[in-house]
Length: 445
Image (cartoon, rainbow, N blue to C red; front, side, top):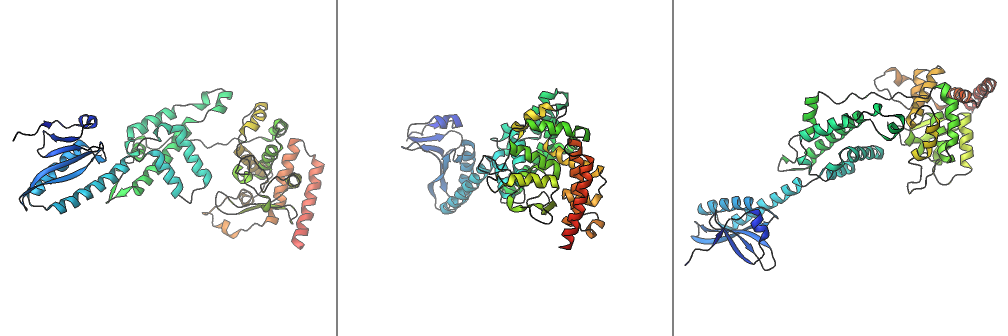
């Protein structure tokens, strides 16, 4: 009987096979790939079982699902060796099935992309605020968008280092004013991206594990951190609107044609709220007829509800808005979310009118600076800003009520109104008397 023809089985050769038949390997005797009528390509091996003294055929698995030629050939060698030692066919089949299942799991791991890890991370980290998750997605998409469809295990320390250096080389301060507003700080973005990637790799190391083996064996960001001895030192922003600029800022506000955006910026300026806290403010949490009138932010950065009194200026502003309320939000928007989200297009003309660039968070810093100028106490400022000081023992003994904040809030408002040209000094003294009387009525009630 003539010897069956043998072939040098390789990936390209097997991929190109189309005619049904059995193609035997010239390297390992008994190992072959079978092409069925339907076009399926199945690896198998013929070997003699020492226990039964019979030649048996063992199916290894389908080509590329998940077996490669090389893996299947190695599996064929193991099967032949074990059958020669008397391993029964049923046991061998069980081992093959188990090995195939493990390889499929491993293959799934190897295909997990950075984008999948980012999605899983955001879904499973329930404690993260939605705005934080959006920030993570934004920095990854902006700075490492080409990696989103790449298997995460293929991202190397060298790749991370190159990206980090490329981002850090973007010098926003060297740009002119017009382009600076369109750009972003490369060093700050590089540092933020590294923190997010480090968290994603740590998450992948814990999340994707099988039989005690993790998908991630080396966190490339941690390794880079040791080389760099820490990320870029990012200087904290300290930009504020100075009192001599208040009038100019208020006049430039007239360039904002949308009255909702205009009132939103004024509320930020006169209350020191964070932009998301003000944007999501609901009428249900605004008490215009309270003693004193107040507003409450329920979803805050530190998780604690934040109630502040309304100065006379903010009180009148919100009363006027209440008459034209469009939905449950104080500052309604056009989208499905219901409240305003993006205001940069509306404020573009305003910014061009000013000699200085400002961001929404600058208004919070401005509010804090004014509180310092009118000589408010440290604990009063922290209470107005909803800052917690867990390491300060004395802070735990001080409890400032909303009534205690009425006069400080009015003093901040008076200072701003004076410097904006909205109120004279004589009117300020009158408003202070009014606040004192309001406090007395509130205390007596």
